Image (cartoon, rainbow, N blue to C red; front, side, top):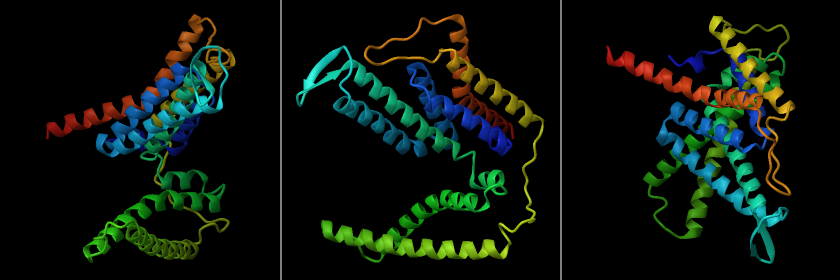
Length: 293
């Protein structure tokens, strides 16, 4: 039922590259706010509030950290607020730090949400023939990160059941963590060797080797690709024409908005919010079908 999951990997990749390109190469506060809002809504819709809570908390801590540290290293600006450690903190440096932190948080949240759609098998499908070894390494890395975390929890629970970790001393906790890490690292190395031998036995990377795939480019994929190209091209043309210009130093300023700029902002807003809207509508439709069963 999930439309985004069923889209062709190439379409998803084009949309992702266009979206992240807009987010990472602009510091316009409106664009960053839309990107952050869209990433939060999409992540919550994709994995649920409980699963997204920890990532959201860390992301907002990142925003706070960048906002507070930027004025310590950047003292430009014409609007002084206060002096700390002999350094003048300006409104411009605080605003730039906040926007930069929001941009980093939005990128992290987008990658987290995209991971639910752009799985390792899709990544391997797109780049397996062009960069077979690199694609395999990246795909294995993406796969091993959650497996590694799950194995750490499992080893810890087993050792705790055996009576370990009763002491609250820092040295005992450190030794316990070292035992868990050693066991999981050994498991990861053995698993990697088994996977490499299995892939070699299947002839992965041999010239002329064919591969089976369930991905097919259909009518829905064509429509989605056209939408992605229109939104991405509009954002690029808007940036080229100055619609996304915004200056923080020495004073906060922006060009006088025109009607064309408003159209660009609306299209960027659609780009940022469209994945979340599709995911929410898809889940609502699925719940409606389930209620009628």
